[in-house]
Image (cartoon, rainbow, N blue to C red; front, side, top):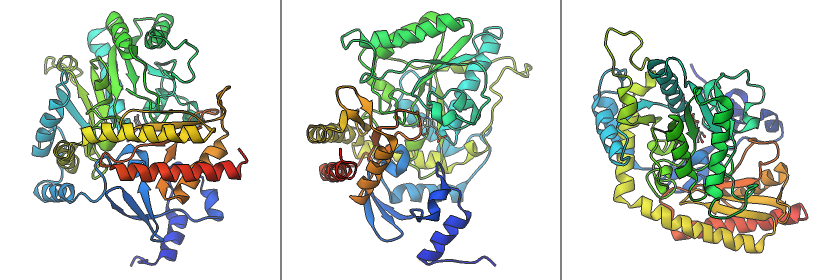
Length: 462
Ligand SMILES: Cc1ncc(COP(=O)(O)O)c(C=O)c1O
């Protein structure tokens, strides 16, 4: 018989005893208790002590795009699970067919949807597609993949091999060969002059790496359309247009990692749709079903797909990949309703408008608090970079950034930050409220941050 536990103290004690939390140094629980959340409703979270917060990070990691407590998603999933909960995805099922068609409507130029169940996995599929095309079409060449400094693509050894955040890789090597880094697109800290050529100059840095490594080696490039956990970086005008030209010039497949930006986060269905760029492969996860069920997608053009249409007698001519849980029907059933909600409630428009309002609020905070060096964002994807000194842009120390997240929580607002990504740049607060945020929610978030900045300035004598 299991030891059933219901009271708060028991649950906390058992959490400490048995649960291994993500990204957590458990030594801290020798002197403090882990937080436990028990309820989510709309934008609100309630913890085990009954304290309520406004969630300005959509479930911690940019996921619950349509907010908590959506009964219609739960009902659709429940109905589908009674109908057919699972069969391996070599066989068709109705929610996957309907969801794929609906998703493709939002992605002109793309045509095929491959399901798995995490962002890392979706990106691994993209890497495997590039590598296999290298074998099928290029005589074993063009299997290398470029990735950008500051971008993150997942937690597996393959995706960490393509990780532009040094601190996340420490102690997990050796990594897979064939991955090459090129410089970031940070406009705030760029070495280039701010003028009309900025985007182009930044993107041309990728070409330098291609020339160094050899164009025969490189088959793909993976980027986040806007860098998320690496510090909320929005590319300057012309950046992706130049990148696309370089990809065409060297025959390189462009992979957009929309794991964070996809499904409305930046005010359009996908982040890349803000730019004049046509990716060959797009990956997504997190907001696809807003966390109601795990699902990720690797979406390709028909051209990419056609590279895998070969003689059935050829054992190696098709995409020899499987994801067991890519056959769970709960994911596409939830994702279908998720898209429906975004459309019906005009959440893209709301996200764009509330994003502007949030950024306006941030600008007000910057006028008031000298610790803020830069504010930036697109839609409800926003960041506040904190510095010791605005003139030198020296980043504030990481403990101050951590304390700021704590102070915001104290003020009732759950926010995030660039976390152990770089040794010296863990200084940007990240915010991504659900796309349902109202003006008063945004005001509450900004007021909470204001209070937290004041508390931090006092505590650290800034
Ligand atoms: C841009 C990006 N890509 C990929 C991933 C990996 O997704 P997952 O944690 O679902 O494997 C993340 C996770 O934070 C991400 O931010």
